[in-house]
Length: 348
Image (cartoon, rainbow, N blue to C red; front, side):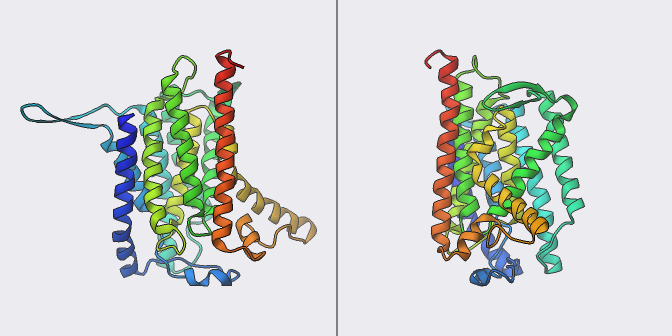
């Protein structure tokens, strides 16, 4: 428990006090956000510093690393670094690796002064490399290669596990990226999701006879560090935002929550907990499919939050209501997870 508190506190403090410094650096370099012409009501966000994800990704990693350091004073100062286990390192790999892909995307947007970054082929190639490395490492760490809900379902994917990893990582990376269109929307929703995985992973750690997760305490520590880091970032990203997370942040969040779901064997449960990201992605898919097949649009604009924006909802109203929906998804997901535990223990 102490490690979780340290990770969360360090992640929060590094992000909270590091973000304003990064904002000043980005402003000096004029690294700002590009806004679509259709979003006239959001034109004021043009030029707001982006790539803020660099701060909370770094803060989360620092929080995880520091949580393993113990300092004792007994006739002298002794610093001991506790062992880092595979589960935590794999989660950090997914977090940092996907952040690198997002950073390259953001950097190209900045250097070429346009809203398009990496080509689809280049971005997918980068994501594939991270997914393949993660799948290889997870396989060596003993992760179940079966599709799971709150536990493995018995459908072993074998060598196709890497395809499943890629699907989850890219799906949620893109889902978070699509959600990152209003101040605090993606960051607040993601904070709720990683907080739920702190609970899930720690519960698995406390009940090892029931679960077969990969180093669940390590996963809980990474989740706690990311939760603290996202809260620190939200202080500056809340409306009106002083900084935007950019692809570097969205890709990192998507990679991390997918990794947490894979390593805790709760892959399909993530569709419930992270339902807001799923809904945003589906709104884009349905919009494109409907327009191509019928010539009509289902929504005023996709992703989904812009539909409500064009309906006249205030930005803060959309954000808070989407946070509420995310909270409902998280509560439902945790309820399903705990209900399964009670069933296994014979209480239901």
